[in-house]
Image 1: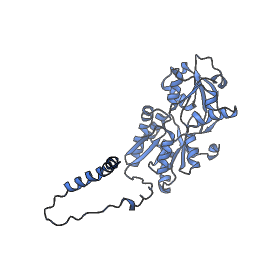
Image 2 (image 1 turned 90 degrees about the horizontal axis):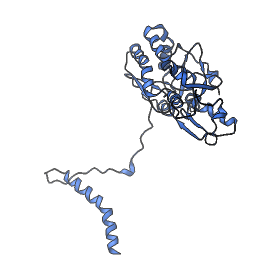
Image 3 (image 1 turned 90 degrees about the vertical axis):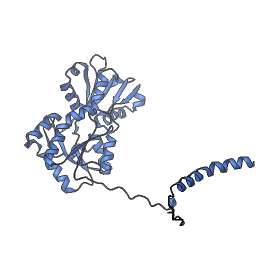
Image 4 (image 1 turned 135 degrees about the horizontal axis):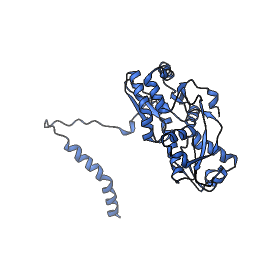
Length: 305
């Protein structure tokens, strides 16, 4: 019993003995005077203050939701970042994250100045009071878009019902067209993804969902119709491999937003910058790279769903 107790004490005391040796080794004084030690009370530490939003006036941080895969996002948004740098006279940093939630978290913390978000993420952000809508893109004279259900052209599937028991690709848990809309169709059938599909996957970008169907990784997917059109323009062969079997109603376009805590002066500055972008040749080139005609003020009624 004594041996067992001694072993337990040894295990307990050994880290303290080692710490004493290390502290002793740090004492290089030769004065012979007693060493003055600082006592650190770990039980008296005060909690860190809450983090405040900090906007670096020397760098403009623009977050872009993963509507496209990272490479596609960089290619498409680089002309816009260059334009913003020229107009603002400051470095502009493109911030990407894998999920829409991560972009929303950056906005909640005030870690970015402006963000391009999807409609579903914006709706969630409004509920949590973390962002303010700034402008929306206008494409083909419209400020709305749709969810398209797609399958391989060679597949036998003709309707959403035909995809029961098949593999389905969702985009992101906060995506309106790539998740919320197909969920609403399932809810009307009193079904869940688990009960309706054999298996589901999250691709975390619309172009990946499109490719998943084109490559036969998934039997079907629900994607942003504008991204599908954009993908077809960049890769015409997609038109031969993808077929649309369902179209949703129209939703408000994915908006450009700013953090809720952004100063009003900065918000108005960004708003004017985007609204006036068509007045500049470099701005028009940036819009063309994104497939956008212009930015306009939002119709908030389009986001009440």
